[in-house]
Image (tube, rainbow, N blue to C red):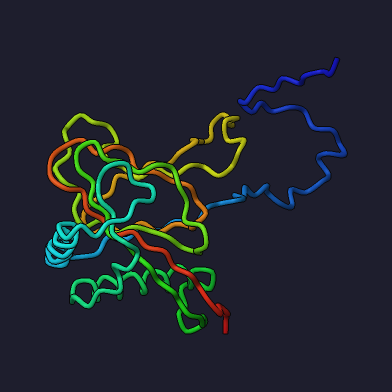
Length: 232
């Protein structure tokens, strides 16, 4: 039978041998984090006017019956050509998305945009969820970066925890074996607000919890494919 060594976490001074006393303290242990998942959140300042225009465009498109169904259960989802629109609000949103993706691409070189080259292929679709609507677990295969921009979060019922939140699943299969003293969780929930972007790797599985309340929960989801990326 293997012997289990039990140690007290409270440090206690112990006598040192002569040989131990002669060894200088030349370094300290360094804690490093491995296998981190890059994610980015950004709130667009003064987004009310943009959101009002996007809301009108999206609800008008929904009224025309232009619909696709991928991960949504209930609700409405447009085809993946929303960002091809020529309306000023759509053009403005597309510009913000490109800037955000360029920013995350430049993060490995300290945010220096002058050091990166490449092309970005962008597709996007609009979503409208109402009371009881949600999205099943999914990822965005075939892309590099994915995300969502929140136009309107509706009027959630008070007291409903994580109402309509987007939740990301931890990709590490053994995370159910937590380490004492360190925060671990099998999922990360983000409760967004209007004007907020959430960006994440396309392979990261996620879902949207049911919305409970009145009004419409409106968002624009997007995929980015990075081509010919290189550092200068």
